[in-house]
Image (tube, rainbow, N blue to C red):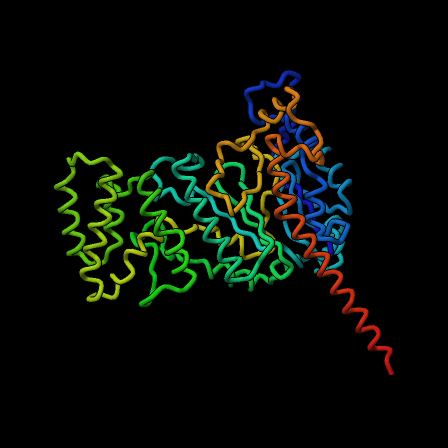
Length: 438
């Protein structure tokens, strides 16, 4: 099998500027230094080879051309990246044959070039929360809205481990405005597209679109155990605490009308609207106003929830609408989707796509992630040794992320891969002996 490195389209941005401006966080000169000295080739190769020694035919996408490539070893992968200094690197599926030979197979009429293995991946983007965050929009992100990503990590990571039994999960900052999740267990990598779709649909909660006032409909008298756990353990406290403090989602008519639209009882809508309009000039802070109005809304719904089935889960539906992870489900459903590689550099921000520790994701600050210019300054000041295999490198801007990748993700994964390979070999030997027994 082959794991491919795909080279995707893009303008030839290899600008030869002998005097790069230090204030730019992303330029080709910095990129040459980064991929020439700092990118953890050995670690990435070990990950993608899954204990087989040689890299499977995995798809790595370079942002400078259209060809697909695969590499037999880390040295070839390193040489290819250093010769291109790609503005973007994506990883795709393991294919049945060497991608360099795919055109020959196509011309022969044999459809052998097909994806056979791929990590189960998830893509969550902060731009999909624009209707529930009021501090930023589009690609912008700040400390007030990033916690939405933090909660998403907690909810999905917990479910992947507790509901599906996966162990080898890697969370990575996208470099700009979101997070990516790589589920690397053997059973996850071998899921069919149909099975991937089933896992993705397990996480689906949003049913509506931007034109629907009510985007979440939690059917039935009680929540599914996964949704109940997510609500109790993560979503409810976040909604009533940090989200209210940072977004003040009831503080203005424009904001609270969105929420009133989620209530199916027109009498409750009218009653709450009247109260809130009459208190528009309150001396309370925006946060205090939001908290007060939320308590009023819950009390109003509680008084009628036994009379109308549609009101029984209305409070939960509001919380889920604002806080539940908004996954790009199509990315998870198909093996042939590409996803940005860990430790590559985002071309818009110059920030490195570093891993995120799900157990300490509250501490992660996307605005503190090192940029190319900061890494170059660290090298120039003598604070960074240009050797990612150096045991002392964890004291540098990037070193802590590489150390976490190795110790918390890569080493346990490779141990599991070794055990699986040894078990498979022993099974084959046993079958061979049985075939010769009389």
